[in-house]
Image 1 (tube, rainbow, N blue to C red):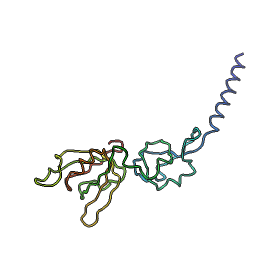
Image 2: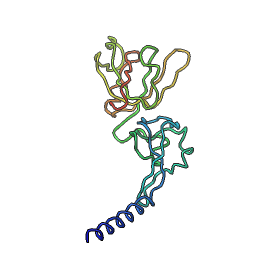
Image 3: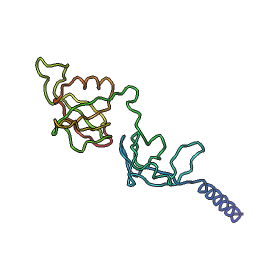
Image 4: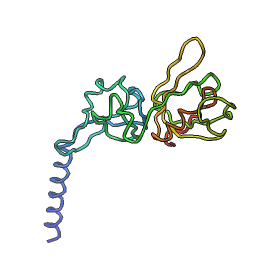
Length: 190
C-alpha cells in the first residue's frame, strides 16, 4: 500500500512540475533599480522565465533591443518585470504635481545631477530687501525629482527642471534666482 501511494505521489508531482514549467516564457526584468528618466542600457536588464496570465503585458526577452536607449517612464526596483508602459516618455507632471525650472550656477548643484535624480532644494540666502518675490527663509527645503537639465549658454546658468508637489512648486518658483542649492539624495529617498 505504501509503495502504491509513493508511485501516485511521484507521478502527480512529475505531472505538476512538467505543466508548471511548460508555460514559462523569458521576459525582461530590471537587474537594478532605475529612476524616472533613466536611459536603459544592457546592464540594466536581465531575462527571467515567468508564467504569466493571458493579457499581462510583458516585454519578451528577445525584444530587448526595442527598449535599449529609451528612458524610463516610471521608477522601478530591481527584479521588476518590464512592461511597455514603463518605458518611454514620462507622463509628468502627474495629478497634484508640477514641474518648475530653477536657474543654478556652478557650485549650487552637483555636476552629476541628471534626469531621474532625487534632490532636496534648499534656500541658501535670505530674500533681498525690497526685491521682488515672496522669498523663503534660509534653510527652507523641498524634495523633488529632476526631470531635465539644460545649460543656458554663456552666463554659466544651468536650468534644472524639477517635479514636485504642485503647492510646493509654487512656493519654490517665488524664490529669486541665485538663492538656491540642490542636494542629491540616495535613489530611494524623496
